[in-house]
Amino acid sequence: MEHPENSEEYKGLTVNKGIEQPATVNPYLQFRKKARRRQFSVGEYVEGIVKGDVTVLSQAVTLVESVKPEHQAVAQEVIEKCLPYSGKSFRIGISGVPGAGKSTSIDVFGIHVLERYGGKLAVLAIDPSSERSKGSILGDKTRMEKLSVHPASFIRPSPTAGSLGGVARKTRETIILCEAAGFDKIFVETVGVGQSETAVHSMVDFFLLIQLAGTGDELQGIKRGIMEMADGIVINKADGSNVEKAKLAAAHFRNALHLFPAPESGWTPKVLTYSGFYGLGIQEIWDMVYEYYHFVQANGYFEHRRNEQAKYWMYETINEQLRDSFYNNRQIAEQLVREERQVLQGASTSFAAARRLLESYFNRQA
Ligand code: GDP
Image (cartoon, rainbow, N blue to C red; front, side, top):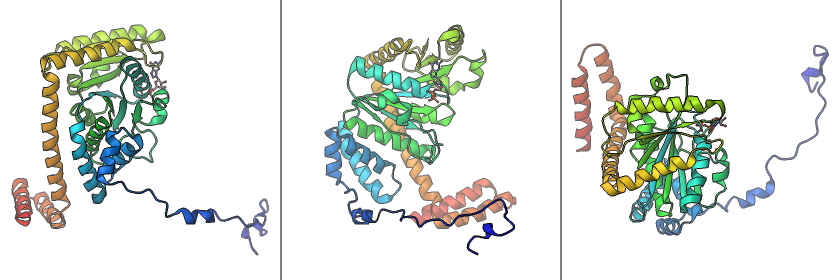
């Protein structure tokens, strides 16, 4: 019998003999296999980027995000060559918890800024938890309907999951490429749930924190460190019956900000309410952001912050590569297991174990 389901035992079920299905792969496609995308040379990448060719820029960013050493080698050279063309932009970090309205707001903010000031806008993202296969991805084009079809915008989702340091470094390198391609406004989006704000703060000129009016205890959920990073706090969804609550929340935030020491920039962070969805209060937000820009340009803090960030990223990169080199070393990995056991058994102190491990690492390098 061809189908066991047709036997007596399966009375309610019969399986009909099917017809033969065509091949799932179009046989003609095999002839097209060779037509793979040609890899650009470093020079071609740089030339395309500097000309503002978004296709070349996209491919270069893909290279930056690649984990393959041969891609990384090309990417680093491209970045190095793009560096002289970079830096001439205003970089803005935008953070908020999921549901705060980041995508809705960035769509509206982006269009507002482009219409008001012209130029070109790149929207990048840092989401250490994101994986391409898993739904919501920051900076996803589909979440920014108007901006994604605007000819002067470039939207790129977060590099895929990895260490936060790694994801952040890739985004920072992508900023350089975007700037070389003439993008003079850069938004870096991140979810407001912890360490990723610090990473974004370390690469932007202005840090905008999107908040929601809650039940009056909104200040409890937000970490002090994050508030201290903010150059502006904006309370979203100030529309309909929510307007008064939003105003109250803004007052709470203003009071809380008074308790912090004055920021190094000399700028007093402002708190505003708005509605991204209804487009209310958008102009006031960007008046504030650009007021800050002129303020820190005039007092030299803009330059100072950029220099500090450049220094930070140099040390971050050193730290990250040292760490990777250490933990990826096979002998060290084996020794680590033994030393860890010793420490757990009380046979060695943590410090002695660490010293032995570092010694064998450095002796191997020497
Ligand atoms: P994200 O997760 O931070 O990117 O937030 P979304 O932009 O996806 O917004 C989350 C939800 O809040 C969506 O259902 C939006 O329609 C809604 N939303 C966003 N902005 C506003 C606003 O200004 N007012 C109101 N009432 N709803 C909003």
